[in-house]
Length: 235
Image (tube, rainbow, N blue to C red):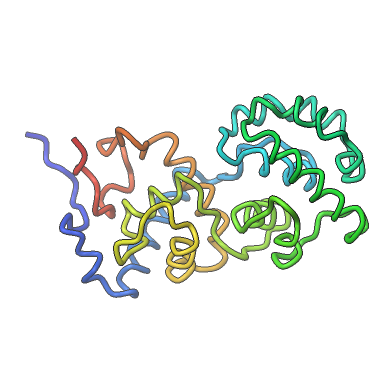
């Protein structure tokens, strides 16, 4: 029988793990991910910070692949925040319909871009405080924009993949649910150096898509298995 790699305890010994021990294990995980995904970044295609903001708003409850199919024509039609603010609700809804929740997304994009045009001189703001003032922008979206475009590590972007992997890897604790993005972000920020927050977000997303999938994780091919409490526990 093939011998499994040395792994972290499967009894969820994470509860016996001190914060310092968790930091050391997290550091090993980050080092491994840097080898696997040295250029990890968002899969959303964009050529400006405004395009990144719009694409990230559209990515809610939608795949990046689908968003990337919609945005080329969208970005050709609307060049500035004022263009989006002046767009008709019906026309914008039609153009983004395939991304889902298109009515709400269209309202958010128009309102956010109106605020950008009127309050920020047409420029997407580069602070968490100001980004969160925009309609449709929560911490997840703000973290993507700040980390990816501005190179500012203000937090960790927690999407479905990051939440799932943080739980499986034991990087979040106290029985927290992978859907509680606020608590998971706080846990990750506590154990990861600030300079790594944006990278870890993108790397975990890539790993979640390719290896640590929701239904059938590929533990036998996972380079993080030796530091993962959940490795080889899936049937």
